[in-house]
Length: 117
Length: 113
Image (cartoon, rainbow over all chains, first blue to last red; front, top):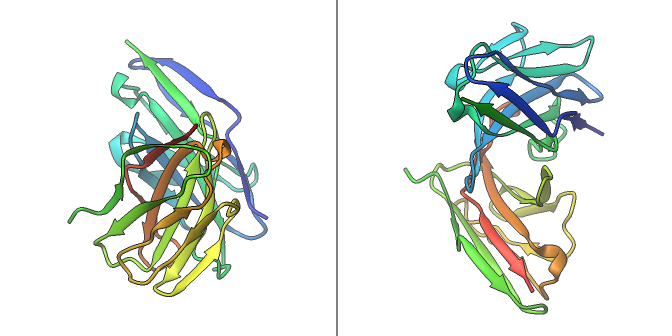
């Protein structure tokens, strides 16, 4: 079975400082990994994904994530945080190859990012 | 191109009532999903569909039913609503392919009193 852990319920960072939102995963094979962001009263929006190739993945709004196979981690990062980045962030994973289960994702519990001016 | 739309946005039900949450997509995606999000929690998969006429249970299907008669529509039916079904419900779609990201609707906030 696949699982995802986001060990921090909340991350606080000052505007302009770098931010990291942590994610670790567990799958039986090689993973597909995703980050989504949720703003208040909205659905989830896709930020970035790791499928294969370069371990550093760049996504929307200046976010990037680093895939680390040995540590089974996929931490989300941004060099300089903005107040507008304040939101709920979800990490998600699915196993490869296709498990014939409709491309199902397993989501972490979410991390609330608070960026203060 | 509206993407994924959900109706209603909000609903209050009494215990034992029934309702249908609507989800429609105009992206011609084959895969569709229903999730629930409880306060402070991640998303739990209720049901999913890999195409018209095909549905299957997710992690938390009890108390819910779905149908998929067309590619566009994937309604979620609640029979005999219970307070434990108070949650925010999200519909999502994926273009066929094992590594494509999901597109989410704006959600339906349901309260059962």
